[in-house]
Image 1 (cartoon, one colour):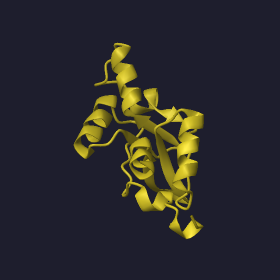
Image 2 (cartoon, helix red, strand yellow):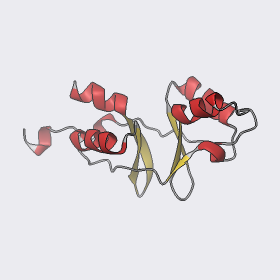
Image 3 (cartoon, helix red, strand yellow):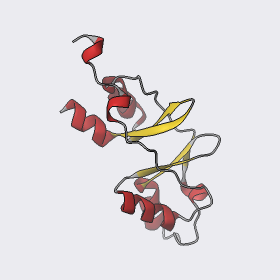
Image 4 (cartoon, one colour):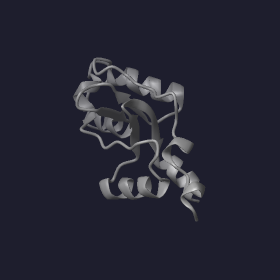
Length: 124
């Protein structure tokens, strides 16, 4: 298979990117994910951050009040990112290595998101 036949992140990533403020409530994040039928939102902060359905689920399971808890309280920081030109096989390896399901796509700024569902759909 030549490199021109290989699928890259840019070919499968979700775009436009869905984001949420670090000051939003976890409930608002959960509602946005449900509305958009996605499982993660990028939090535009430094360092880079993300809130996923897993973060929301853990907050609920811990008995936290998600109507007052903020995204900043539960978000994952220093997230791994990928570039649009990365091959899907490399993305699959990263997700396996780091035990993650979502990777923000960055090309100077955020441009999209690639998920384990995208990887599975491509590689199956």
